[in-house]
Length: 302
Image 1 (cartoon, rainbow, N blue to C red):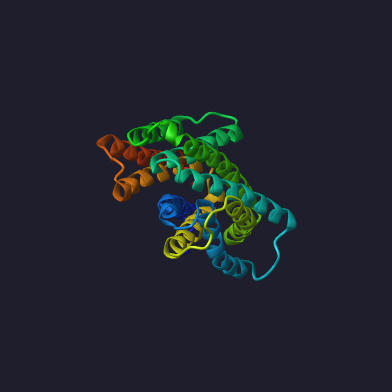
Image 2: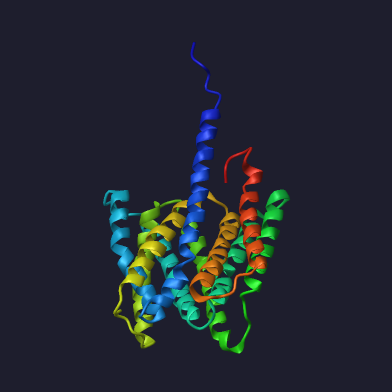
């Protein structure tokens, strides 16, 4: 006698996909969090390092996109949205890379991740309702933990003002990038979307580097190759693949992983102090990422 299919198999498969997607979202943010350190290690100008991040990664992204589409051209409207996202990403990288060299790693990461707050606000605007229950607690816990985490290492000083403002501007640009990429991912597959957006950044980043009189050609290619493969291929690849599976609120909260990892990396590599309060803040952010998924465990996975 054949057992009836009561739908539990489909729900279990959907839950597993949701877990993999959430792991990809977290993994992408963890990989992206070390980008600031690699920019500091590069011997080119800061905007030029952004150009090489894209230029080195683009052949890999183009190959993956070609395999994904079978060589077929995407719809023109979708190409336009992906390229517009790339313009915002180029502006984000230019502003943030300039900011990284003009302020502390902790400051640059804190202000650069203002996108986390802006995306949470965007998610609330789209939902037309405030978070409730576990989601509301997770939002409060995440931002309180982030404030504790960065409060010890953040330092407000006139010498850092330009870098802080550039990093803040980068966070605004990154918010628009994520919103547009999430929108176009409904029409385009992940590698195609990322490849188109990456291609759009090249003339802006190279033109800006030359206009600023930066050193463009490096002596040591290692930091730039690692930056391209880690941040652009792996980090952004995981992030863009996971985007359509989550709300802006969840995406915004997971961005707070980056300040936590960056604070740890700054302590290990540059001697920036990490205290017990920083550790507690990092644990609060981690707890918030667990709590944000609780309301949906009995329903469809987020």
